[in-house]
Length: 256
Image (cartoon, rainbow, N blue to C red; front, side):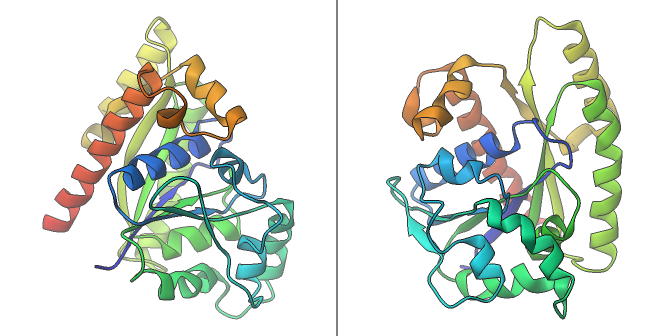
């Protein structure tokens, strides 16, 4: 089986993108699927989220064509990691000098796709060459989105980018869905924006919603995903529901 390559992307920061990538990757791995988490963000928060080593040969060296093994085993069964640190920030500039610069990540992961069931890519909050590489290399994209006005403004922009990539660089790319994060059911604004998003994007929006939850915020400081920090918390249950829906959506997309 060839791995499904799922990127988590949104050009806006602070929307729960990394938290979602780490937690969904962990839950997929806990379902005994061989899973690889690629930290593609120079901040390296996905690496920290699974207690990875930022000093090891990682995404930057791997993208630059360095000789070494970028894959780290994590303490989580069935979950491996390619780490990132601030060195990766230079990759956007260096990619400009490379031939087929939009396809570097695609070529790097080609040999890994037979080894894994799922490859998860946590992208930086930008639409630079790193994100374009992820869009070109991925089979599916999930857009985590906070229920606030500016996030609603930005969603049309990333949808346009996805359509352009589908029209040229990667016709196989599928939008798996928009996942609402940091949702506060007590907020009238959150309720209104969630309603507007579901009205405009309909079935493209996940039924599952990730709430604001203190346990989700605490877990990264312990180097743990939420299901390993507090499996009974509202946040953990929400991420398990969302991951179940993710797997269902993939099955539906393959059957179509």
